[in-house]
Length: 270
Image (cartoon, rainbow, N blue to C red; front, side, top):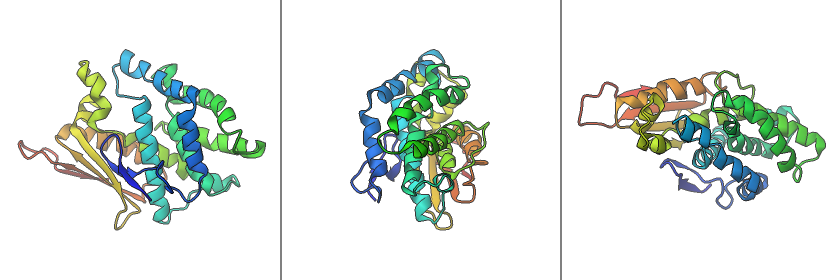
């Protein structure tokens, strides 16, 4: 698998690199998504309500690219670690469809923001459903499309912490959404004067690195420059990890690297 630095600075696998996946299906879908004008328009438009109107963190194209990259990285590492996914399998779909479900859900999970920031996962469902009818048509027959559509929509809905993921594909998307936490995520609202807890805590996160762990399939290492980053780790990420179905497969370690001041928090492990 090919490795690269993603936009936020974390070391991850590049899902668009040559031979990133043994099956070309997800690579074809990723290219299709990148070339689709309607998908691109949604990813740009969905940032207006959260950032321009609510002065909240970035939820646009950059956020989606990072979340999708990290979701596919998590998927790869978990598969390498022997984790068996259940979403596609229980629907009678192929193993190669697991990564496609993850990629599509990660791409479309936030498009409900075009309607409103509040309760956006529920608005994402009908919008994504309409897109999926077209996006899946060239790859699956009618029965497969129905099953793929259901799995993708389930993963989209369950990135919201109020909903319980019933598949590991959904759990991956849910956790990956919280792993976009570095300071670049809050750049726009912070520069415009936004000082909410999400913005300030994002400023404290320096890097997020995903790798294979010794005792767990996935080790997530988070480096922060002050204790404000605890909110991102202990509140947001912990909430996404809880009930994801992957609690026993992922270890999260956060370290405060600030040596110039008293460190209220030096290390957090989940």
